[in-house]
Structures are given as structure tokens and as C-alpha cells.
Image 1 (cartoon, one colour):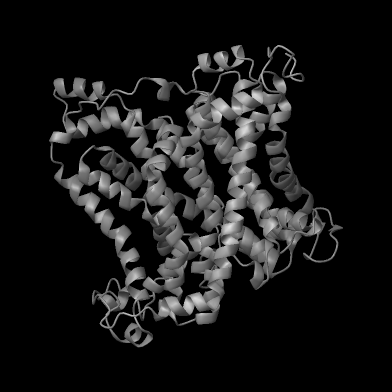
Image 2 (spheres, rainbow over the protein chains, first blue to last red):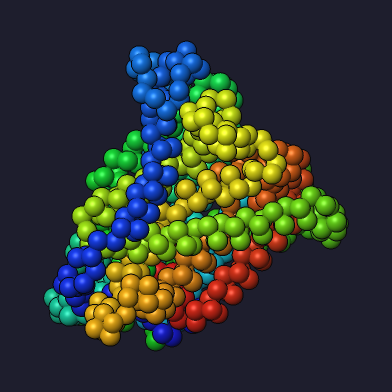
Length: 296
Length: 300
């Protein structure tokens, strides 16, 4: 399965995209399609609506009224309570872990992807096939030895102990996406850098880096989402409240609040808000990047 | 070719050397491949998670494989994989085709469809726990009797509920894959079919579906291998209950290791998961052809 003699096919992407294909379909109104589309929208949005609307409900209102009606006396008390519950610390921990994981992943993956695309030789191809293998393995099944390893390295219950495995697990995908994009840089550009006497490092920094910036945004969002939302590593590799990250704090809140569902859901909203902002800002890149990443 | 010296005095070179891949490789080897091998090693050890592991040979294996809980968990895992696939694939396929259309309202819908992906699994599980609560959730909101059930407490219903929640969370991602796939089908094919008098259903059957076969394989691989190691939502949503009715293999592994402190036994379950996952991925790879699969996996 790791036959790398044939380069990863990027043919689909390289084919000149037909500008706005004059497909006949847009002119036909597809009524069953539209009904189905809006039905799914309902399935997606009803839970989201429930989550958001409940957070503005007082405790009494929650137990009394219809849970889907708009609150009669909207309140921000739930948000205030969550923020007083050390929420800021969990946000900070999550920010540190996510930023650390994303920055390190992007740095080492970009260099590796550059070598994979520009380099020659057996060694590099072997390394690349090792990363490909990483995609086929259900890596989350390795948590027990990982737990052993992290405790032996004295990294148990530390943020670094969360960052390091997160980086390792994000590398295969990241290297693949980045090398896919690097391959699309025209050969002539590399040639002219070489003519100018630029070293490989200079070529990477001055030519490749600016050109793959959209891809970097794509993988940054993708890896960032995974790191921010990751649950298993924090559950197994941390313990104390000082090192708690957001998803774990949601789970822990559950025990503390038990019946205070509005408070719980306020925590859910607050923990998701940064990702919503990221999505709004980077949506264009994320969707086009993932789209380009997958052949047909 | 020489991979060592990457540059010479005049800037002529054989490209960057293999050492450039070293930082990434080091991370991957130390924190992913070494633990992978560790699964096999620890499955032969007795370890409670605190003291030093001791050699115990195949005892963990015989113990775990003869435990009826393991068999039950394996059957449940197979059920979840099959049901998830059956629910998510047609939905994602149809939604992908739908959102591939260039109409404005469909673009807006596509943006909104993505929203579940922004929630963490813990958040999704907690939210659905509240929504499905028989006293304060959807059961009370609408009077319909078929909605007021104990979705998470009834062993007959809980599996279907879990399948639904997982679909809610992951259909958006697979929709995105299918959308990308549909948009890459050459428009010429549809034009030709229209000229030949093929209706929408025929076009779907004879153009869209066959053209999407690699997307189907990619998406199915991710779905199946993904639901094999599916853990977070089920852990928070049901904790494996009621009783053993949602104790899937990964959850069984976690509970065996970190609750019952039998890390050796849990490693046996982990080894089963790793091998099954690899075999499934290889099987799907075979379906699609080796090289195709690699290109499919770019950009996961």
C-alpha cells in the first residue's frame, strides 16, 4: 500500500478548473432536494438552538417552562457563574496546548513536506511511507503505552505532555496536505531560485512559505480544531485542576453541577465560541483546502 | 542518489537531505510508533498502572478473550460500525450532491451544516444528554409520545441514540468530502447525458454514483476506522451504560485499563483494535487500488 514509485496523484487538481461550469442543473428547481436540505438544517440547528436558548434561562425557568420556548426573563447569570468557576484558567490551558501543538506541528511538517517534495533519495521516500502508514493505524488505540511513556518521561499532568503526542498524531495528515500543495508550485520557480544561488533554506522561506500560506491556514484550522476539542489525551494524561483543558472541564462540570443544565450548556457555548470565530475567519481556506486535498 | 550533502559551493544541489524530515519523524516515532509497538509488549505484561509492569506471557490474552464482556463489546462495535455507515453514507452523499449545487441558498446551508464540527465531542455529548433528558429535554417540549422516551436509559433505544448523535457530529465532514467529489465531476458528462435524454435519476445512477466511487471508498474508510476507535461521545453520553449496552471495544479498553486497573488486559483489547483497524484500512485500500488510495488520503 505504500508504493511511492508513483507520486501521489494530483492530476485531479492540476486539471484546469473549468471556469464556472455551465451545468444545466442550477436552472432547475429541485423541490425534493430543497425539502431534504432544509429538513437536515432543522436536524442540525434544533440542538444548537436548544443549547443557546437554554443558557439564557434562569434555573427556575428551566424547570418550569417549555424547554424550546424563548426565555421569559433572559439572564446572563449562567455565563457569569461559569466564568467564576475557574473557566479562564481552562481557556488559558487550552490556548497554550492548541497554540503549542499547532505551531510545532506546522513547523516540523512544513520542513518535512518540503524535503519530501524537493528531495531525492530512498531515505526521504521511506520516511514519507512511514507517515502514510500513520494514516491507516487507529492511533488512539495506543493510549495505554502512551500513558506509560508520558509517566516515565515525568510529563504526566503537564501541558507539555499533552502537546507532544498531539503533535505526533497530527503530523501524518499535515505532511500529506502540505506536500500535496508544495507539489503544485511550478518547477520553474525553484529553478530560478537556484539560478540566483539561493540555498534550500532560503528557497523554503522565501518561495515555498509564501506560496503555501493558504494550505498552512487550512491545516492550522484543522489541527487546531483537533487540539482544542481533544478529549482522550487530557482525560488520560492529566489529573489536576491546574492543568485542566476545556473539553475535560465540561466533563468535570457535569459532576459538579449535576442538575444545573443551563450552566453546563453555557460552558459548552463559551468553549465553542473561539472555534466559531476561527471558522468564520478561515472558512474560505478550510473548505477550499480540504476540497483540494481530496481527489475524487 | 546522495542524500547527505545538500548544497555545494555554487548552490548546485541534489535537493534537501533526509535530515529535514528528522524532527517530524522523531515526534511521530517516539509518540506514535513506539506506543504502537508498546501495545503488543504491554499485552504480555501484568500492570496496574502504578507499579512496574511484570511479564505474564499470554495470560492476559486468554483472560480477555474468554471474558464474555469482550465478545459483547466486539458485537456492539460491529453493530455501531455497520449502523453508522448505513446512516451516514446515504445522508452525506445526498447532502454532498445537494450542496455541490451553485445556488446561493445551498451555499448558505453548507455553511450552517458545518456547525456541528465546531463542537468538541464532550460538548456534543453533554448537549445531547440535556436534549434527550426525559424530564427536561425534547420529551417535554413536544407532546408527541414517540419523542418522549428515555433515549439514553432504555437499553433497547440507546444504541440507536448513539448512532444518531455520532451521525449528527460527523455527517458534516463527510458531506464536505462528497461535495468536493461532486464538484470535480466534469460537467461535460451531464451535458452529454442531457442531450441523450437522461433524466435526473438516470444521471445520478449512471454518472454521479460511478464518478464518486473513490470518494465513497475514502469516506467509508474514514468512517469505519473512525467508528472503530470511537470513544469520547459514548464515554460522556452513556459511560457504556445502561448496563453494558453501549460498552464498545474502545470504551471497554478504557474501563479495563483505567477503571479496573488492568492495563495488560486493556492492551490486549488495544492490540485487537489496532489489528482490526489496519486490516479494514488495507481492505478498503484494495477496493480502491493502492495508488488511488494514497491520493485519496491526501488532506484528510
